[in-house]
Image 1 (cartoon, one colour):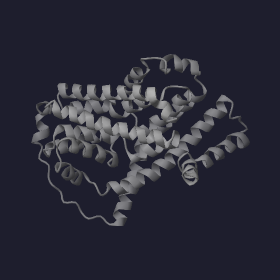
Image 2 (cartoon, one colour):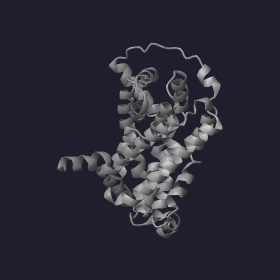
Image 3 (cartoon, rainbow, N blue to C red):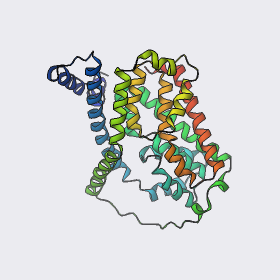
Image 4 (cartoon, rainbow, N blue to C red):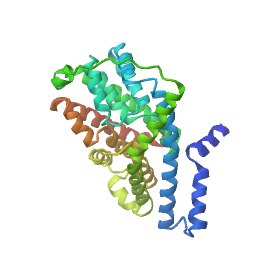
Length: 334
């Protein structure tokens, strides 16, 4: 237990980095951590460095594993199952094939064209941007492992239930015809060497960092602003746990945004510090990652309005239920 606690503090929460940045702020720059400027600077430097270190290590590891699951292989695996087991497997595969919501759309087209039920593809579509091993460990580094595991579990449940509802609704006719008529070539997967997989993982790290670095800086900047400059009374007036509408507002506010989960984590950290309910914060994160406006616009090109509306409604209601549940029972995880 002591060893696990030590590893959690030093490897995930990086207490050594926290203390190093504190020395930089106080001894080198001559600022006090209790001051707004000193506290903001410490929050910004510590979170940016920590997130980039964890992100690079985790994406490399996950991408190495992902090299064993190219789209064609993923499609073949999903094609062997039906019903609830297919939805569950699709959601689980989404956690080890971490695509953002927009890059998941081409996979949706490929899976649907290959004859997979749309409910199964939607389970994958919900799970892939919402939950992955990197986001789980980053959540653990900011909060704790119990919250991280709970987030992954409810995300998987949302993906499975959402896909199953869409399956039961029989909405195949509301997929645009070109999706079914696209001819997809079966390309034989080359057997990759260990070096090939390592090179692929390194390239994934570079590509993902290039895509998300700005969102991380913006997210950490907003987090530092909330953490040290915005009074707690202002935040609690809008998003306080005693406000019945806080979860709904957080979910709706997240939809127009387009950011990776890595950019929303520092904001979540600052909001929880200010007393915002855990469920409200998780609803905001899920709204940003699963229902971003750019991904809805892209999805509208491949499905008709009714199917898009059902997908949006199911996921939104699911996120809101999750938010209220965590607000009610969040004390069990803190």
